[in-house]
Length: 389
Image 1 (tube, one colour):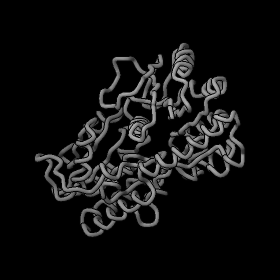
Image 2 (cartoon, one colour):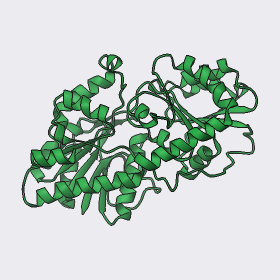
Image 3 (cartoon, rainbow, N blue to C red):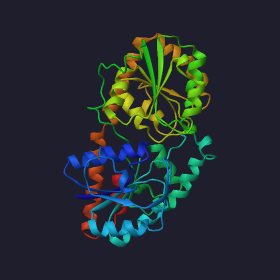
Image 4 (cartoon, rainbow, N blue to C red):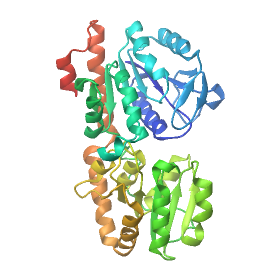
């Protein structure tokens, strides 16, 4: 089966990791994959597996959204005509081209799947006034024209259905992590970083990630010389926050780490993973920390609370994060057995629900169902959609 994957390779974000992990595993399973993305040819990353690429022209690109050039639709259609894939899977990049895709694929008679990533606040009272909710409102009429839309949680599905996307069109396939690569192990992060307790945040340093709430709580909790907080990632707030919260407080800024092996070693050396986000989808960084056996603390943003509920971690309210963490951080510092227990529970939850193997198996089933109908020239029937949802 030939999959044309429309996604991202840069700049780094969760969408990039999602596309890399899934396409690599599809290749391992014998699928033919073509990768279409907004990029200049010199941006090609040699760390990605070798497969045919198409570089779509663009005017602007960020971690959040992309503005394509007027020629991008023409380039995309020409590439699909040449490749003649069995299916197009769009890991949506928040681009105007997303709205053209259903017409393009319908004209070429190619089944179309989308993965819809935008973060959200799971609390409806906060959601309706947010820009994230406006994104869902904007996209819902378009997503109703896709053959299938993949989301990460029941909350996300309910939201889209309420906005008019047919229930049978929406398929829940949670993010998954490679449980073999990301696993508990003894590791030393760095000879220069010595501490009895290591806490870690991994993600963008941006307003929606609410990193300053964690930094304030760390300062207020007076965690002591035996504790360090490692910050992995980059973003618009990094330079200003780094000046205010520095190594004098036991906070170590590691910046963006592109080397996956290095990132895994850091996670394996840590004790506690903290994610204080105001909005999320389903955080791959959180799943990576859980898979490595860290005690995990995250806000009830997006599907993250659902991931940690019933004892797999500690779930915070998105309101008053600093106050909650000020109380929790010393507890996690002083109770190593409790931390180890939470780490075991987190790992067990990943193995139960959030492995990449399970994610790929569900994707394969979805692909087969869509392609079998397309081979007979049939639209997806509502009863089949209902079964797949």
